[in-house]
Image (tube, rainbow, N blue to C red; front, side):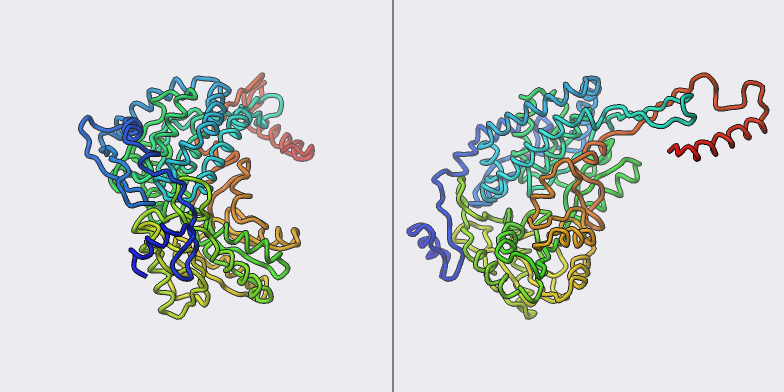
Length: 547
């Protein structure tokens, strides 16, 4: 079928598709151009720190391939200015009580939920994802805002610690803001991985210079406006936009701490630059995440969960599943249900709820996805469903794809596809499944399915990933915002969420006050007598079970 004929089929018969392809969802009537008008783009672009006559780069709406926005490009000199402005604002912000800073997050929470349709339109327009998957970003950011708005005082409060000498030494551990955080955020989750990571940085007393990916910068700029409306000082959040290899190093060069989400290759470069300056960094990087379907799994529930795990945001989710490890005894039943559900997913690019999966973000992502599938098929893999682009829907649509017969030499086996492609592997023993799951250098997320929850938690404990979901795809662990989330191995350093997610943006300071006597020979004791007294004291403290 030609592209022209496919367009006609999709237009005349909503829900129709090329023979054997995924059905299409209704469009919803609204266009990207109407949802993201030029006036909105110009207003948001004014929030970028850039020279008076900056160069401009144009972005494209993935759903249609049409021009979306022209955005000013910052220079390394602009980055320096951004840090100067942020530093001036940070001092006054850090002087405020934590409860005052936390109140901004709680007001932002309410504004975000009230105006979520604006955010959903921008996320869809810039990423091409389905509206339900865009809503996951709103949900995640609102949960983080509520959590840190309520819990920040507890995380940041001074804590009494055991002193050098009981009673005589009063010791407190305090938390001080790092200063100005350099935050480099990716295109795939432009709301959650931008502002979601910045909320704990702000409430901890920091300022931020943020470099979002140019393709999805409007979403972050919109969130910045909303936070300013909630009470955040405008200069506290600086936004710079530009080519990653040029602007990224400039951000790292000036930052007091670096927060980065992106590829493992770039993450290594960021870590090296930060280490050279002796500043800390947290890095969430790539993954080749596995889902284990054990012999006693509820096959229907596992199949439904696998669809969410593999095809949310068209597979462009750091914690999505790209490897399905299925016990041989249930593999046929599982695959029958999983392939059927996958084949029924509705593809669409409407700015409304209804589509089960949207578009890839760019030609580059489409090319990688298609190459992985084509190379695998040529080498002997079988396509159980999908395996083709859908230009009848938009320039970067690709059907959700399930591959069988994938072998280790195929790129799709070990490399991160970051697209709607999953490979199926059968196993006979639990040991074999755990070994296969742990066989890559990555360690970001995994999923285990079983009717025996004790067994599921035992298997989870053996998986070398930062998060493990039992009987859920990814949302259970990621949505537990009081618990840390991050990767092991080549999947990164540090954690977001929970205590780790806010304390990474602080410096620990110990303040110890000595009373009555110094920790030195005194009261007429000579050196030897002083040493003998302390030796006896140490033995007594151990006997009394002091920590």
